[in-house]
Length: 220
Image 1 (cartoon, rainbow, N blue to C red):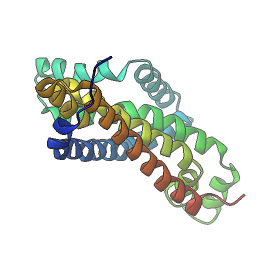
Image 2 (cartoon, rainbow, N blue to C red):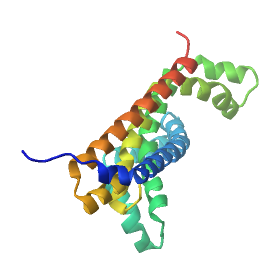
Image 3 (tube, rainbow, N blue to C red):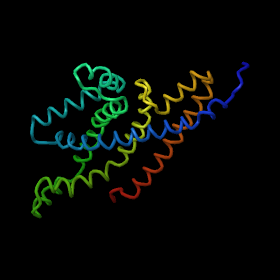
């Protein structure tokens, strides 16, 4: 084997890799934020006494969780314009990642809601709160604290999924790595550095979220 490692091409465009990494983080953050909002409503629908709401939300979660995210991305970016809904590539990807993450987050929230003591809801109503106030002030904060570990895992997973944005030319980390490959043919070096950037970033995210978990964990 006479292959000699040469990282010059990677270092020359390292600023592109960093800009792509930062974009990936933004995409993941926006998507999980929007996905959490949608997921919260879906989770309440899943535990609702209303059979229609339960059925609709259950179908949404089941369908989305059984479709590869790549198919969702390609459908939104290439198929929706056919019916008049034209979105730019970044918005398309955020839309795809949002509806994908919402299905998973809804299940996380549903589990969190079911784990809460049912007496908390009655206690809130007994103090004069409405059902909406009880959910917003008592149940949701407690539920969020209990599901922080699962949400952390979802965020890390979503960040790694941003690499799929390269298929529609969103200039994130994987996109720029492929660009460096095409221009320099330093395949091993570019993917090696990119892998290290992903691993290092995931480690920092995991460490930061673990600290939040310890700070806001529900006392046992």
